[in-house]
Image (tube, rainbow, N blue to C red; front, side):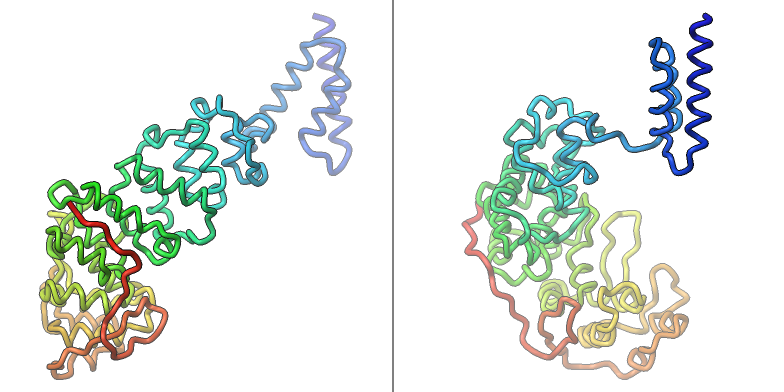
Length: 375
């Protein structure tokens, strides 16, 4: 007992002395105190307890993490090939699926091939890791990924059919994915029957990126029974429905595609969920934050008016307001355009992803792959 008291006294004295030294961190203070109390194991237990209390909430040192945790922790340095211990795959010490973490952040992509080679299974994740990626980054910079990483993404898409989801189709058909050749996954899905209209919980045409609608692949989908109207229904995902995405992007070629197949969309869009109300595109685009490029708002309003939108239509969420009255309540600068006589001829616009003003031109988009026949 006397030895314990003596050791505790020495520990306290060490701490007091160390605290008197300006600029020392809490861990360095405790290490100095531990040096004072070395005549018994009890004081070291006290040191560890005090250290734990003083550093509660601090990041766990990289040396105490599993190899999987270190690779997927940015503060532990860049990934080094061969640094993953296969024994840590099944017992990673992580509360979330390592593959999901690795895919969500492009800085961790280089580790994906080794994770798969050493036993990581997409089935161990709550959902396809590609779904996690698509919902975090709808169109990642796939061009920055190495060939082994792109091969791993293809494997994850083909080995785990849980990846056949609205958001993943949108991601794999976006321009960056097409440049990297990942849209070939969609061709494989179609060829193997994974995109059969009667077996999906979403409309594939509504999931495609707007810039991919006028493509040989999309035409192949229509030939196999997929329709634009079927793509207006509900789906499990977080990315916008197809027509809404085309509208938000001010993609006039994609809007042409939709309105040729469902002209009523210029006036009213059915709700995705049964407990929701339809929405009016003309009113929606008047909201300053709706369009990704607000400067295209006049062209989009002009386009909708030319395709049958009615500015005097009543709003579903407030029948006391027409679209014009709604615009006036927001002090929209487009009130005069809405009150003008209707335009008879519908202009045709070039595809515009929101980065350039719309210009009059025929709508066209080249297919990037030759699709394989659908079942």
